[in-house]
Length: 109
Length: 114
Image 1 (cartoon, each protein chain N blue to C red):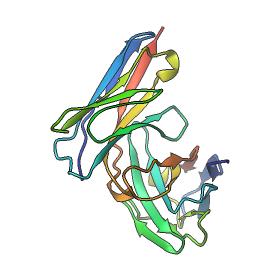
Image 2 (cartoon, each protein chain N blue to C red):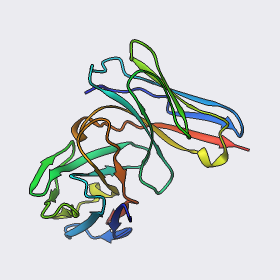
Image 3 (cartoon, rainbow over the protein chains, first blue to last red):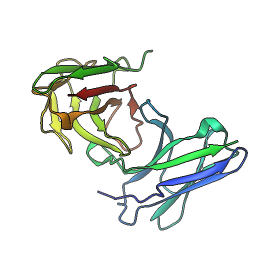
Image 4 (tube, one colour):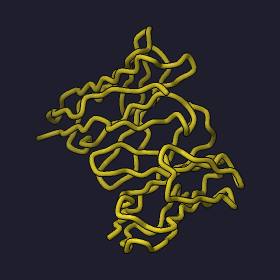
């Protein structure tokens, strides 16, 4: 199981770019990196997934260096509605999908 | 497409009572799972199923039973509720176990055991 380490919390203001970094030093060759977002009183929701280099979708970008021992979720121009907990997961299969405590992002006006 | 649905949304039990948390998905997903989330913590896997008739234990299975008689439904049973089982329970499903397949989560059931 590849353990992940993320900051417990981050603060930002509306319109800023937010980068959340996740460390996963013992990631396996076949592991993908997946980020989920969870709003209060809701289940987690998939944001983005990647294996290496950079992935971008309409919500976020994911940067993965060549050694894959870390990854950075980038949220461009955050708004109040981006206030949530963000989870970094590494692996595949239900047995290997371990949700840590995540990063609690607070966006202020 | 309703996605993953869970009932009830809220439940209060007394210690020793039993109950079943319902979970259903209409996406024809083979894989379903149950997680619990305690305050300020991440999700912990309770049980999962790789298809009808096949279930297995996750990280915290004690005190819970599951069965999977159909592809659509994956109920979670608490046999004798304890205060330590006070938590929010999430059901999830995905097309396969492949790491590239997204898990879809239900809205959760908030359970309080007195």
